[in-house]
Length: 276
Image (cartoon, rainbow, N blue to C red; front, side, top):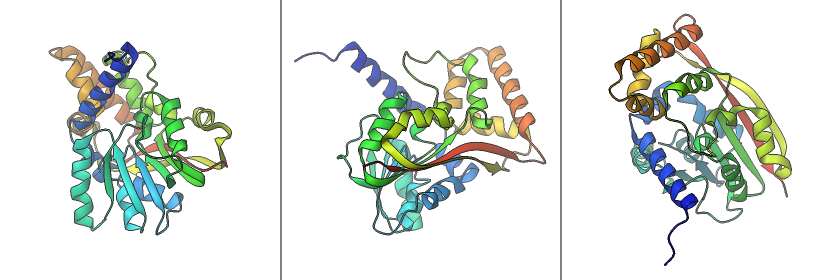
């Protein structure tokens, strides 16, 4: 039996780290209490109808998948992190939504070509490290004429700038991994999708976040709940000076965006149809 190549083994290691990162903290609280409306918005923009076969990539705990199921669609919620899927199952049961939950890598989806009428992702697929591979898989499983829908944080918006703020404190990314907020750059996404889609509608919108009246409220919530932020602080280990410096930088970022106790977080909303 042959041993996995170095590239394959490196990819497995990277995906294992991603699973661990997203299991840290409490991402379902972020989805449910900070950006609860984004999933339902994406479902509406995709025109999900009863009977549609829908795939939500990077579904997490079901912020978009559950509203799609409640709209009458036949939904598969896929994510790399089983802990998030388990929470999603519970949330779906509470809301009376019936859907399938599948552990799956966005870069190697375990579904047939053209299996879905709608393939969507709400700030999920953007965290797959190899953007081209993830985009290829997303389009592969969408039927001809089907709908692709995306909500992704922009590089210039609050979350994109938060990742830029954390970058100097984080371990260097592995070779070939691309920054998640690039998925919020319209030109980058057009390049990924190319002429394989038509009827592209891409626009920048903002979601109002009024949970954090003070910068420290935002910082402490994300330090406790948001996997990427939790991971960066843990990587600092026993270096209180670096941790304090990151605290100050995140506070400054939040202070810059706060207006009357609320922030506007920018995202790119894109819908398109799979080309024949």
